[in-house]
Length: 111
Length: 113
Image 1 (cartoon, each protein chain N blue to C red):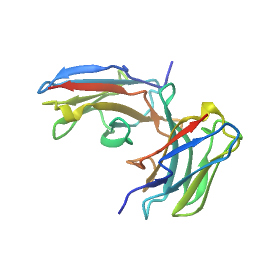
Image 2 (cartoon, each protein chain N blue to C red):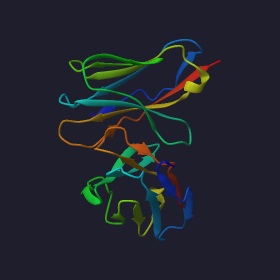
Image 3 (tube, rainbow over the protein chains, first blue to last red):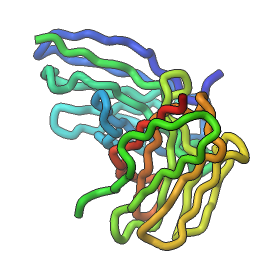
Image 4 (cartoon, each protein chain N blue to C red):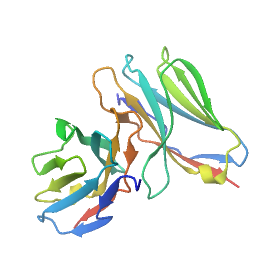
């Protein structure tokens, strides 16, 4: 089992819709969770991080964490074509200080 | 601040040649990370430094890879000899206080023929 898993996509949503991106992780003791966005040919950039169970909102983005079920999700409201990118989930597991990245989900927002 | 600066942006070399990638972290950041990204394996941490000292190099694939950080403003990742399977994008990132919000450089696209 991979440590951090994401659907590779592509996930296609129409402009204005809600995009829902999911990530599951294997280490139950993980404490820190991050979402990165990476445009094609560019470097990853941090969108949000979440440490506690529940929701965290920042503008059009909401991160949701459920430690019991070991998943973290990212919701993008009012999706725009400029949101089209690969979204990487990253986790800091309990056994180390290193980021473990998921493979990423490619999102395509159709105008 | 100009952000994390990597050079070169693109490197094309032949198998067996030595390759050196360079990184200048953001001033004041005390952590520096080297990552490799491929389609097959995604984004992998190779090594990271804290205050110029290598902390964890368990991600370095083999002895052909080495990394140094002689001072707080410069790091290198060297591959000698290079092989076609080393072809990837290599990112350098830096942060203040650990893995929270590392800033990534633009990356070096390495092609080994």
